[in-house]
Amino acid sequence: MSELSPADTRILRLLQENARERLETIAAETGLSVATVQRRIRNLRADGLILGDFTVVSPEAAGYAMTFLVMVELERERLDQLDAFRRKARAEPQVQQCYYITGEADFALIVLARDMADFESLTQRLFFDDTNVKRFRTSVVMDRTKVGLSVPLSE
Amino acid sequence: MSELSPADTRILRLLQENARERLETIAAETGLSVATVQRRIRNLRADGLILGDFTVVSPEAAGYAMTFLVMVELERERLDQLDAFRRKARAEPQVQQCYYITGEADFALIVLARDMADFESLTQRLFFDDTNVKRFRTSVVMDRTKVGLSVPLSE
DNA sequence: GATGAAACCGTTGACGC
DNA sequence: GCGTCAACGGTTTCATC
Image (tube, rainbow over all chains, first blue to last red):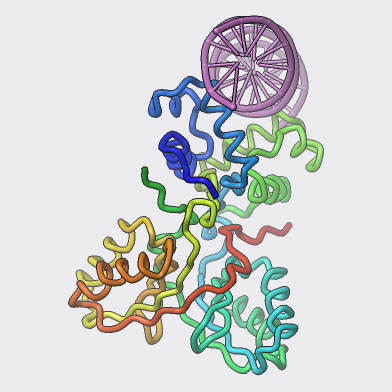
């Protein structure tokens, strides 16, 4: 994996903040020509450094007033059991994020819900109905202080 | 907050998957005209339903091989102490996400690190050097099974 | 292999319906 | 509300170094 050039770093930093940043602005801020900026972005996409561009929707505006952090412990940590749970979490739209982790719990999930009743019906489907889920601990997210997917980029 | 129209829902679903989706494609998939799609997107932006468009960079490709989930417990939960920690977490580029939560811990952090040494120097700065941090528990993320910010959208 | 010019295509905003 | 069109920005191609 080759090191990231200072120019590419600056381009990515700007795009992480705003994917619709004008090429002209990026060119001005990096001292490159518009054509060069455009070519670098194309290469960054092709090389897999840029995973994609995504529109982020406000959960609140879409009716999802609540966010939860759920730590899930499985009964048996066999590979097929882990994969089964992984697949289920991945397929559930209200599970925004799912991490397979070390420690007491096996999975950490960030879950969106319209309200408490909505969350409870999700826990039924995802946890209570699954005989392989030993226990789960729910934390209510009071403040999504910082939410993003941006990666630190420095020259 | 008015309910989301079926057409807007479909537009947002497509943009959540790919912010650079062609208006023509969106128009075809929704049965709307290109002009209408464009107008709706502009309104969705203005109304705050769309928070923004963001380029997502591969953490691995940028040299961040490790992800951690850190649960942080504070010594005193006074509002100014909470805010101080919130601000520190927010300002730290390697803290990708920070949630203020109920339960045993006060904060849950998703942290990126180049390697173990990098993570340790971060814990020093963020936790050991902060007298208000009572304890923190680290989980290594073995698999980022599902990572995204997309919101469930159904008609 | 990188650059700039130019043609092409998609997006945006203004106008009229 | 809707489509049309002209201007603008982004993308691709090509000639050049």
